[in-house]
Image 1 (spheres, protein in one colour):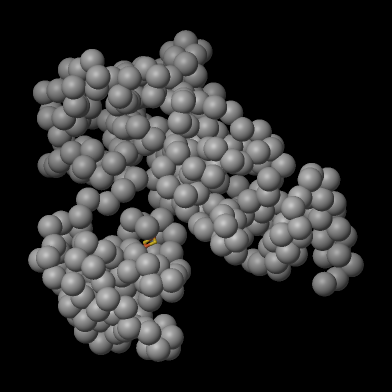
Image 2 (tube, helix red, strand yellow):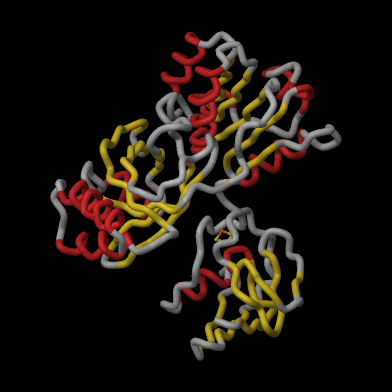
Length: 350
Ligand code: FES
């Protein structure tokens, strides 16, 4: 480490150490400084958004690459002595420190919602994702459900102050007013920036929104076929928006928060991890990634929904099926373990 490297190291460590740390944090700090793949973020503030959702604001360490509005980053937290990573959309606008808005679902999210406090140091990987604003100004339609608002909030917070008259319609589906994240801030943005027109759809009052139905969407946004459409939310919701766009010249830009699985053949399978000398049985509804984790042999992963390609491992023999499409894949080469199952036997060079 050169002179400037040492100075940077001491500066960064001093910043971190000014907060109370448990002894494990020292190892985290020194380990983190040696990685080119992630940086650390110190939680500066936690803000409650809804009864089960918070926004965690971070001051990021050296190495952080500023995000584009709409991107996501993997966050690593130590839970019961293990570092666990999960991807989260960044809700902060561009050109500032990141924040993530998290609903208490799953180990990492529950940690962030219920146990994380200002001063905690977490791990952050570089921002990724193609769910970003278009290069050229155009009329926009955002169609989001639930937590699907988080990357779109980053876009609105970035876009509207830059272009106050930009013509943007936001159709936002949530269960009710209480579960509608950022409800008041969206109304304030619409007051401030006349180009933004929010349409809230509360399913407790209006039932499910069929986002594939052109007549329903036309009632909310009559010129939707002329707009660039962005959709974010659960898989089935996003698929409905994609159907709405069938036949139009530009496909919607989409981001999914979960994966809908095609029906399986009900058969169990088996994987062989050659280098680890391990054979693992795969349950009828499990992915390869899940089965390896249940066998206490975690494999690399990121988003867990077929987006980021962090989970690629090389298939050398056998076959896998895609859990979304049921498509069979026999070619040796990289396989996404988060969205595949063995068919019925697959060998990997790991
Ligand atoms: S973990 Fe992201 S594609 Fe598999």
